[in-house]
Length: 235
Image 1 (cartoon, rainbow, N blue to C red):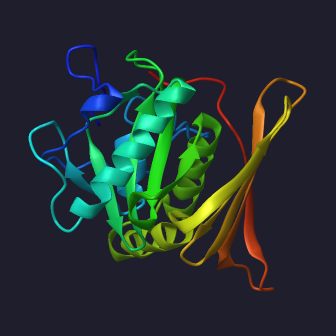
Image 2 (image 1 turned 45 degrees about the vertical axis):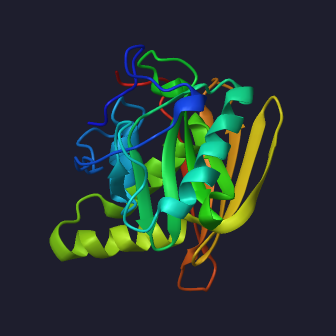
Image 3 (image 1 turned 90 degrees about the vertical axis):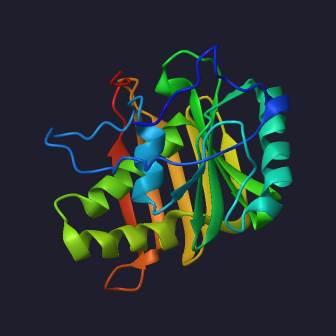
C-alpha cells in the first residue's frame, strides 16, 4: 500500500524531492461484484497495473535512472496544482518508460480521503501533463481491472503491457470540459486516443463511458466500456 503524506511528512509544493525503494502493490481483480478502486492504496495499485516503476520516495535525492531532466518540469506542474487547491503530494513518484511518463499524486488535504486525490501524469519531459480527478482515475482503474482480472502469469503480463501502451498518456495536451451534469477528458496514448465521458444519473451516481482506440474490436472500432462508479471510498 502506498504511504500517504501526513502533516509530519507532507511536502508543500516548494520543497519537492525524491529518493528510493519499495515496490507498489498490484491492482488485481476483486471477488466482489463491483470493483471499488477508491481505496487508500489506489495510487500504488494503479501505477503498478499500468507498468510504472517506483522512481523515488522521500526527500534525500533527486530523480535517477535517466529521469533527472524531468524533475524541473514535474515540480513546476505540481506547483501549479497548488493554485487549484492541491497543495500536498504523495512522496512516492513512479515512472513508465514506454511511453515515457511520470506519475504523481496530488492531495487537497492530508486526510486519508481518496475522493479528494488527483492523479497527475507528466509527459513530454515533464513539460505537459494530464490531470485525472477522482471520477477519471477511478474509471481508469476499473477499466484496467476489467482488462486484467482473472489473468495470471504471462497472460497477466501481456495484458498489463497492453494497458500501459493504450492508456498511459504519451505526449499530447489533453482536452476536457465540465458542466453541472457531465465531464469530458480526452488525451493521446501511445496507440491512440483515450476518451472519458462522465454523466450524473438520476440516482446521483456517476456513469462513465471510456473509449480506447488502441484496443480495436473485430470491426476496427475502438473498445468502449461503461462503468458506474461506487458511491464512496473504501477506507
